[in-house]
Image 1 (cartoon, rainbow, N blue to C red):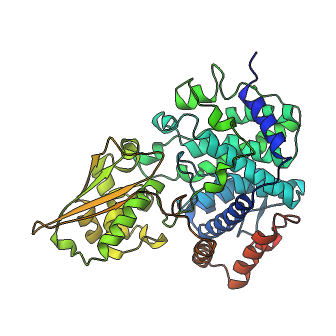
Image 2 (cartoon, rainbow, N blue to C red):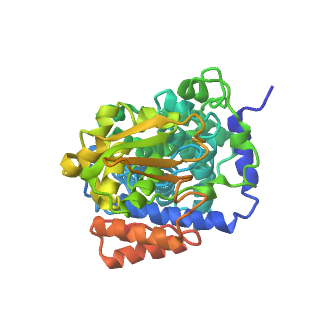
Length: 452
């Protein structure tokens, strides 16, 4: 009988512990800790984070970053994950796509506080959780989205369970059982696209607490199916509508080749695949385009992103609210052409009603390019035809912030500071989090200074 995937994964994680983590991976995990911390602070005063806090009854000794009230571990993971992903400004993994940081960092911080984890175990858990989430997104590319599920939500629960289990040093049987339990806790549909509602925001938080709970159940003796990934009624069948998975992409070279060190950090607070289009529009904006002289705007695009970022086209050209605008290429292109940048300030109820942005967005259309390399590369293209017949055009062959053009540590810290200032943290606390991130993997995890 073939060894179940979850059991193979448990064995791979156990072997990986014997190897020293690459310096680049450690540095990436540290930058991830910086980035997620800033994003949680930026969103702490929003209505959706307040709702997440107010709805969680259980209290304990775990920290919701930037909040005075302490929660149980699951509650802290839920609130921090929701906040970190809330503005869609968090990391992504090219080829997935999947947002690992907003799930794994909150889950591991909560586990570390609850179980008094040391820095090395915290680091290993982060690395494993991110690795499993990212690798799993490659097993059946595009199929989870096509089935109507959010990959971050469903894969994140599995990655969180793997990361927490690794950090707690559970045995292989318990690890595999936790995977089986997490498979029944995984959830998250993409119907938020219909009305721009906040359910996507909570997906990483829900996945983080699900993974955490799955491990605690397994440690207490609760059993989950070891065939959770590949079984007849398993994860891939349920969430990807297929039984044909490239399992070597999850298991092959695990612990020797770390794909998690290639995660991309976002320069813009919107859907990842929109970023290359924004870069094109920003370069065109520098040419001094007069919005009233634009006749039409055409973008070549990948078929795989049409249903999320282009259609229904009328709705994408006139998003009903600020959150919907984050998943609209027409809106983001129009905003970038007008203002030359796209920060947190781009997505407000005022901007979605701005007639100048709306006028440009109404002129943006698309053509599907059958040769587009998505999801292996995220590309951008903007072609503007002016009223006088002139044509201005820009292309972006890859994601800025990704493997081919990564953001620097200085870029991440600049983004972090801006996010913390947006969330009204004082300079002393900002610098304290940066100091914590630099030392977190070498000592105990103490988040008390970041409450309130």
